[in-house]
Length: 257
Image 1: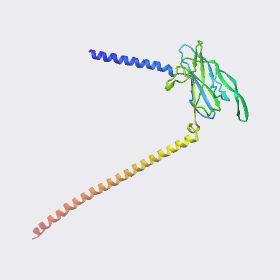
Image 2 (image 1 turned 135 degrees about the vertical axis):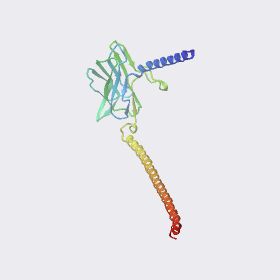
Image 3 (image 1 turned 180 degrees about the vertical axis):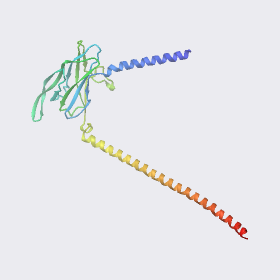
Image 4 (image 1 turned 135 degrees about the horizontal axis):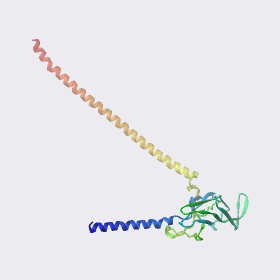
């Protein structure tokens, strides 16, 4: 192996190792506590789940503490039972009471804690919540989560998003709030989709009709072409026969004489 080939092999090896290192670094960063699904309709009620992956190879997750956004209190927060886990709901008094279904609400859920269960290494757990009424004057709800491991390590998922869209080291779970017209499954969204679908179908129908028309023209041209060929052959045959007849007339006259 010459020197150039050796250098090329070394370069490829270094590039492969660098790519592998990037993948190894990127893998754990993407596994963090999050809200599923990540969007909900403003002013409505929604069922969400806090997704908690276990990021350690030698310890289990044994506790999750979720603090709700104090700027936008939710008067209705109901956790769904998760087998093997105990749940505790804490409430705080509201600075300003709100009316809900004809009742005056003076307090709201501020914290939900799950404990007693285990999320083993290489696994994740979802903790469902029914929440509402979601605010109409905000574009997102920020939750803060504390994940406790069996080795007493506590990971604080409380960091705000960094400017420029860069992800924080331990980002806080966020629920994006969208307008009703843009919410999946809403009538406005369905109508918009229907309009686009109608336009697409019309375009497809036009294309199909054009294709059919083109095919019809093709067929007509082929038929006319074949007819022309047949007519030409018939003309040639007629000319040959006529020539034979003209040539045979004098010969017969000579023989009869």
